[in-house]
Image (cartoon, rainbow, N blue to C red; front, side, top):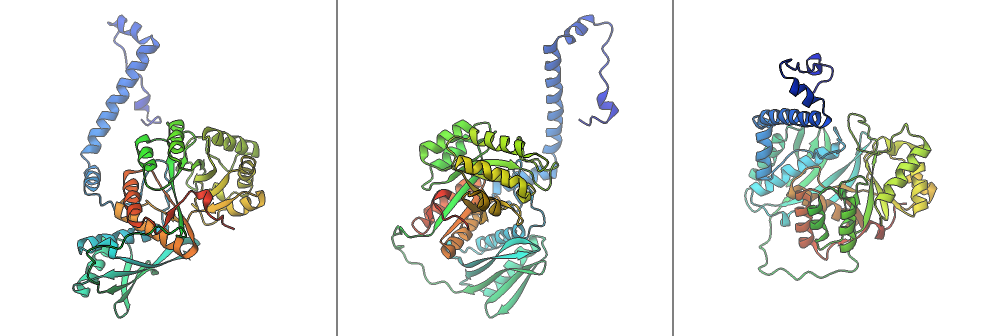
Length: 418
């Protein structure tokens, strides 16, 4: 309701011929009942209007076809509009869909290299890929161009050498790909050997504590996923119990002020830049106390607060007292987390890849492949995802396909960032 609209502030007139109704309304329970009924009626009307809208029907179709091409809009998710890396992920999805349309298996795609670059102060991942094409190469490139056009992004495609092309977004090179002729597949794949020296990767799932079934699904995976739990979530204690029973590492997912605040809501008990040191300390310690067994903490949102040097120093002081590490979710390239952690003597890590800004199983698996490539280059990597069915399904498939090649480990077993 619009509280500023006089029509919505008027009280309904009660007929004088019904004194019994007046008496009924004088009771608190009656007022509550009528209020609930009125709210339910309004919600029903809104729901009926929404269900007839084109947007609603489109969303339903996307869910059924499992081909969303939109950035995640989870509750309390911090939007990163204009972030080149999010546009890169939409191009990734376009390429994946082109492979699918061309009946090319994702397992044959070669991710040759992933390099971290900067554009306008923000990080993005430049990728080099090789596509296996047994048919007409020109037709395949034409399909890629159609897919890029369908994204409605300012994406261009240029041939830079024989069988080699460059994709740019707004004039910034983001992908380079080549085409090769695939060899015949072997009938029996070679057995997978577990390599004790394989690169390490931590997979952190943020926003845990609301969906218990999904928590059980993550705990049942053949990989130790790190649970980052909201301190004020509905099922924090049960989620902690699930993680403990399955041996998954537990972290505190602490809400912090985003640059879009207050329009973008980080949730209850978030750290804000106008808070004094005592308030920041109190909220941080209270959050840690609500998630027993946590070994570390990472920020939920926080693009503004993590740039606040004084506030981050206070947070690190409390983490040092509680012997917790800090994982910087890197919602801003200007985060003060690294310096504040170093000064306070807190073990520090930072996120390399976000998995599910695009909620599509193929796209998420591709993000996992990016993280794996970084792990092979650096020896380790950290990927952050969110509790949704597409992410669970993607991790399950990816782990089964890559078992032995990459070791999924708790964050705390990785080498800290210096």
